[in-house]
Amino acid sequence: MDNQPPSSTPPKFEDITLYDRDTNEPFIFTAKEQEFFWRQGFTNVPRYSPARRKEMREKRAKGKPLFNVTCKICGRVGKVLLEPPDLKDIYCETCFAETWTEYLHAHPDEWAAWEAAEQEADAKVAELQAQAAQSEE
Figure: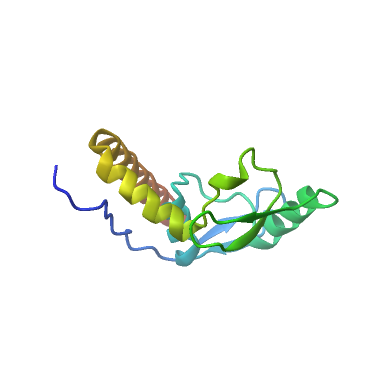
């Protein structure tokens, strides 16, 4: 295995039309959202429109306390719904990505497993895009 950091280029995403599970109203699953889902490793398409997802998130969070957290490395401040068990081990997205890359360099066996999982997720996204394209025809 080479000593390059894991780099997987995202597949080409195109906007697709999906239907809200409850209302059956169409919504666009944008290429930008698809790329976010791909980067997060999500393998399912959303069941609800973005507005409905936001509404449900706000309903879940209503009346619950928010906890301030600070990134261990850069000091960025954020808010989370659940109190972290250990406030000293909080990372922002950027610092986590850098730390994760360093970890993978130090653990080649985990790097291989991570790359395999990423390829599996890519294949699933491509399959879902093909299914969505077929259903639009």
